[in-house]
Image (cartoon, rainbow, N blue to C red; front, side, top):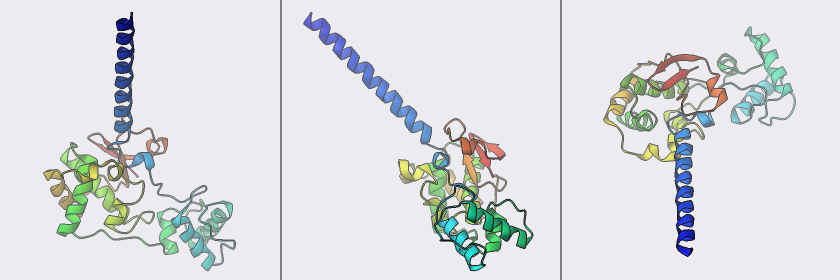
Length: 233
């Protein structure tokens, strides 16, 4: 009787361990190779947005006398109203959303794509390899191009390292993939992206639809699909 009970307990432990391993694998695969999209950094400041960019918007609008309350980094109704006034003054589409054109007119900085120095190639190749290892070569170049496109977008950091290390932007930074050996093809892809090839069509996001459940990412307009990645604006 004791032996039978022992066999039952052992069997239960083995089943529990197998279920744990399966769950862990599913959890990991759900966040790997998604271009950081489960922690996507939204590119447009609007009602509900918070952070440094919103503070910069409020400060610029306050300097113009359009925003008269405290700069708190929270995009509320007063901020939206001030943005609408500014857009009307500037002849922009009046939607109350601080998109690229509005930010540019406010003088909120936009970076320039870096040159193809060896240091830039090495850094870009590392994130390309981590995020797009196993993807078609064109898809690897496209991932590099997305990173460079973000540098020129007013809603993202202005430097290559700033974009790559932006908190929450790329899962590969957090899951250890970034520190893995770099695929040889990634160096060539980085060089091609830095020299101006953009197979993404100007995208600032990409994601693997099989590995992200982020509904905001799934709602982004798709520019093109390469391999397992959708590239979006």
